[in-house]
Amino acid sequence: MKRLILALTFCLPLFWVSHHASGFQEPAPTEAAIPQDAPPAGEAPAEVPNDTKPTNEATPAPPTAAAPAVPPATAVPPPAPPLERVPYRVRIELVVDLGFEDSPATRQRFREELTGLLSDQVGAFWEFEFSPEGGSWLSSPSDVARRRESDFERYKDTPEDKVLILGVDGTGNETIATAREWDAATRTLGPLRSRRTSDSRDAVSCAVRVIHAAFRPLVQIEQSKEGTLTLRARSGQIPPHDESWNPLREGTIFEPFYRHLNRERRLEKVVRIPWTYVVSGAPVPEEGQAAMRTVSGLRVPISAKRRRIEAVGLAVPIQEEPTVVRLLTRPPTSKPIVGVEVVARAELFVPIVPEGEAPPPPLARLVSDRRGDVTIPYGLVPRGAPVWLFIYSGSQLLGRVPLVSGVRPREELELADDSLRLQVEGEIALLQASLVDLAAQRAVLMALVRKRAADKDFAASDALFKKIDETAKPPALLAELNTIRSPNMKLARDQRDKATEARIKKLCDDTAEIINVHFGPERIAELREEIDELKAVAADEAAGLQPRPKKERPKKTSTKTKKKAAATNEPPAEIPPSE
Image 1 (cartoon, rainbow, N blue to C red):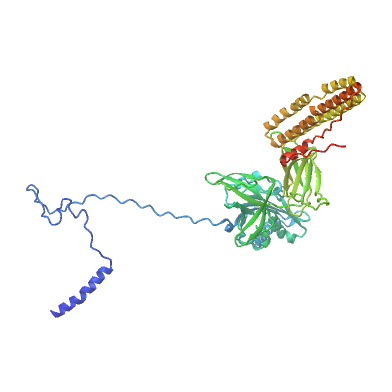
Image 2 (image 1 turned 180 degrees about the vertical axis):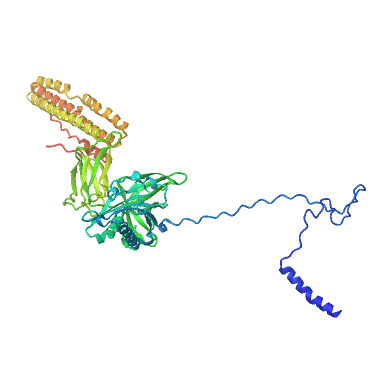
């Protein structure tokens, strides 16, 4: 008995510990185990009616609602890497003709050497692949120069960022490598690049050099809340093995583009921002970013960030060739602008020089030909720096734009149609010439009036006065001026040319001031007053009376002096009478 008590004393605590350690709990009574009509605790159960016979069968449990199905956990896609860590995906369409050495084996060896040398230079900066042997859509090396942007429509929905077409021609005395690059982000085709070598052993290196020359790095232009602009280089945090392939170097020039996206973030169209360049500042290699400055002929070249518009920049490859700029009027006329002067300067604003020194002369003075073309020579400024072009029609500035010579062989610059202003200036010049003649005639008549009055021939002076009144009346001259002003001002408003409208208004206002000053009634009134005094003196002399003292008349101030005094809120100083 004692042994049984000791065993129970020892085993019961162990059972209790294992029972609670296993997390076991008493099952809670379910609704099926508790009858709905069960009496509350502490009350006696209700009596069962006589017609109800208890049975030993278990009462079936009420049906329970099915648990909702749990959807399987969907895999969350990893976040996209930043632009600076994304390498370029490049496809190179290669066609090779090695001349008398051409064979499948030599072409294969050329491909292998080209792949190895290019990999040694770009490293992980590029992920490139060549078109298979005989699988390129180029027919020959000379076919590279004939391709257009429409030939690259096949790559719009492919993952490639860049497509390079490369042709290597070794059929002559030298090997010529030509290449062009198509950019998927801007859907633009770069200029043709070529390199030559007379050593066939240098053919692979020549092909790599032309690929490097045709490559145009891509940057994204981002604007902060404060308004500062920053360049983010594609693959900027993946340094290439060769430093010359670095996409973001200080002083690199980019052409900006707007990428318009739809709601699905698919590209709809690309618009190049005209006459605008983005210049990179000192980059931060660890971040693949750099500050930037904008050189543009537009007032607001790069606007604030929008939801479905991206601003990107593409590096501009420069060739040592001149650029032909064609000057045209704005649509719908698009007429060539002939005979205007184009002044090339290195700065936008002429630097201020000390008094007595002449400002620096312009780099060049050019004139547009009958087609409106102006050839801007290469080398006016250091390589890669923009030159500023000022276009003048007479003394009127039509526009000023920057240009990096050698980027494109031809450019078109649309300017306001200056023919209306020139027409008005011609009509005003004719009117002013007639005013000069009338003013001279009037001065001669007024001098004759004074001469006749001094000779006391007042009948002749009165007859001359009538001639003065009949000629050069201000209302008639102003009416003639309005026939020039009104229709041309309306035409300028219809064309929405505010500059021409302002110029016409200024020309007509200046001419109206000339009419009022030289043909106004003030001078005639002064002359009449002089003649009346001479008549009074002659009458006193005839009557034997003492001659009256001559009145002193202060000279009137000019209209320019009045305007200047009104601007400074000071009364115009009167000129003292001459003795």
